[in-house]
Length: 92
Image 1 (cartoon, rainbow, N blue to C red):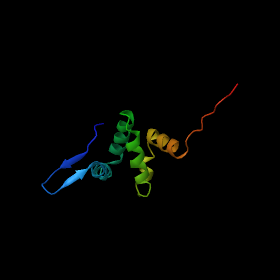
Image 2 (cartoon, rainbow, N blue to C red):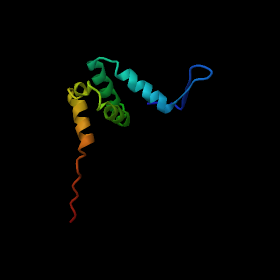
Image 3 (cartoon, one colour):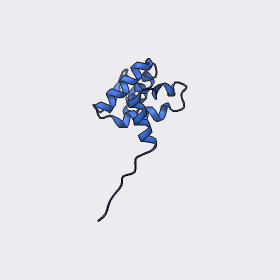
Image 4 (cartoon, rainbow, N blue to C red):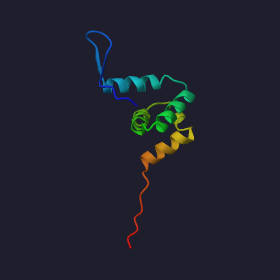
C-alpha cells in the first residue's frame, strides 16, 4: 500500500495521511456487508493488518459491527487481536 503524506484538493484544503485514513474508513462504512468483508480480506492479504486493526477497533461502537464478524476470516483476525496467542518457550 502506498504511503500518502498529503493530498491537495483545493487551494486552501490540504489533507494529511490521517485525514486520508479517516476518509477511507468513512467510505468503508458506506459499503454493503459483503463489500466490507471483501475489503478487509483484501487488506489482510496485501499485508495491511494495521489498517484492518484500526478499522475494526474504530468500528466496535457501531451498530453494524456484528456484521463484520460474520465473516470467518475477519472474525478470526479480530479474536486474535483481542486475545493474542501466548508463545510457549521451552528451555532445555
